[in-house]
Length: 165
Image 1 (cartoon, rainbow, N blue to C red):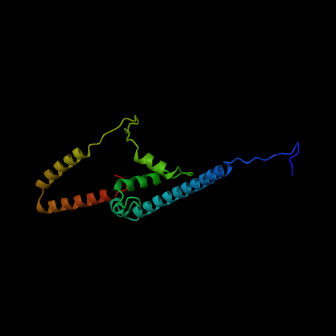
Image 2: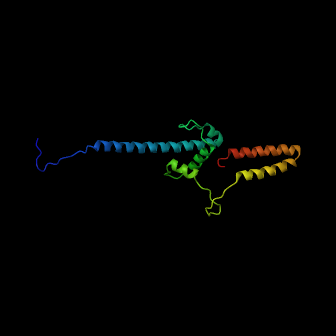
Image 3: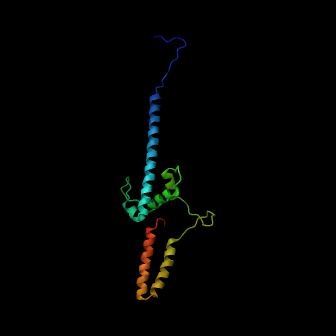
């Protein structure tokens, strides 16, 4: 049949099928990312549950294996996962990786609100604690020494089981 004047011709681009495929892939990518984000929040919730049930961060880190590397995660990773979950409780939550990165890369600020960084010298603090303990231990009787060691072990165990360091 010969086209007549006034007939409308529908022209399909040679690229239309490719553009449809790109858009279909885009939809599948967004769905996959949304699914992965929901799984990351669920995983963080399970981390919180384990820690609340009494598992230590260190113990969890040793057993939690990165599926890409086959290596155990660090205790810092456990801490940041916990902090991200606890800090971002409002709905809708940000993407988990954004929340995690915000927590993991946070800069400490001065308690006076100035925002100036404070550098805590953990080694120097441990040296001061060590000096006090040695003086106390040296002046203590046998029973007092045993009690001091017992108290110190209980204190260190408390630090180990804390959620935040």
